[in-house]
Length: 248
Picture 1: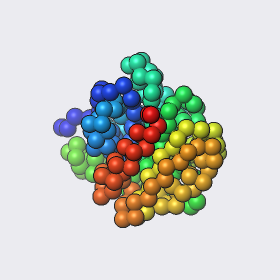
Picture 2: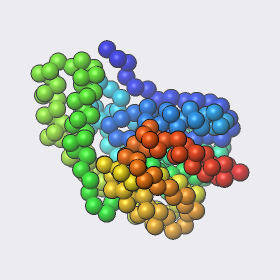
Picture 3: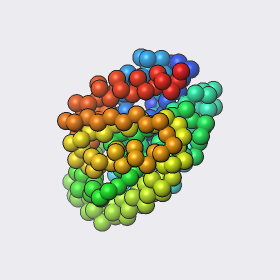
Picture 4: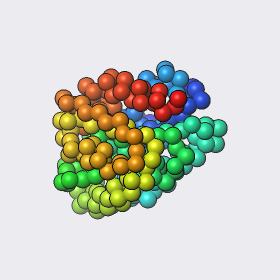
């Protein structure tokens, strides 16, 4: 059986970055980006959000919630503070971007941050229900779950996931309502072929960051996971430029 996904911490230079992963995934979402930034002398922490990275996707629903994941984010900030880092920024992809934005709203001492393909502001709902079930099935197969047990678990997820998705939507609405509280520089990356999040989401976030210096980037041919897909190299380049400015 494969080992559960874990958080990772790359200690390198005095400038620190927290990277938050997507829903129903894990820190692998941001490992490629983290290694690129580490080579540029940044220290990186990517926490595993509660309920994620286990053999059973039911844990995401039974153990996790927006409140729990916000607490995870707060602990990540404290983890880096305890390591002695004073210059700290925070970024997230998809779900992680919602909590990165919330962290910036709640922690004005953070030097900056941003979001990649994140549904913080929603013009129309994009359902991730089917994608979640597909990811759950792939995970159960990965962990060699008995087919009968897997069928039962998938049915349970099909019956319960929408409640969690609604909680995430409600939480993101609160975050969107407070975007004017962000005064730090903010980076937005958006794949314009995003199949899970409205590609207009990035612009909608940009337009509500009225008190922030926003660095907005579109990747025309890229789908949702721009930290690992065809856009990742350009994203890494754009983000590196942004970081150079905010850590001056």
